Length: 169
Image 1 (cartoon, helix red, strand yellow):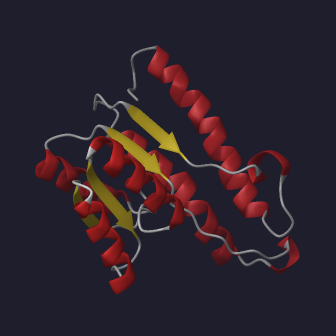
Image 2 (image 1 turned 180 degrees about the horizontal axis):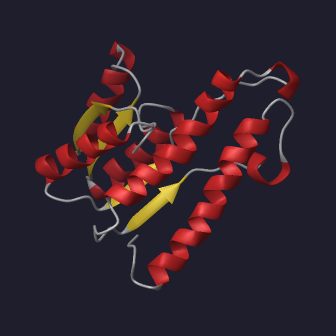
């Protein structure tokens, strides 16, 4: 689960821990705070094995290390929940290229890296979190809307690849 220590990531981690006693690999950009470590202890108390790996999903080599470590630890990857994302709300006339890149990168590059590095893994699911901003936009979120629309388009293309037997999940 990318963005695994964030709000959505923890919601799905808790669901998977309760329902499946899943082996969970959670990722985020930074080290865990004491509060987040307590959240992971709560998942463990539900019967899950939990591994947290700080990972920048925009970095191909870091995602490769994440995938390799996940497989080394648990044997295989059964599914991916890609919920990483960054907001830098501001009207376009005030946005810098760095701000836009920070918003685009986790959704665009993270999606590609995860897909490429797991394309041969027989996964049950490959979930990408988008937003309604991708369809209708939102004031101050032109980059976020673009990134989410990109993910929606990628999901449709990936589903076509799945139908051809080129992807799983």
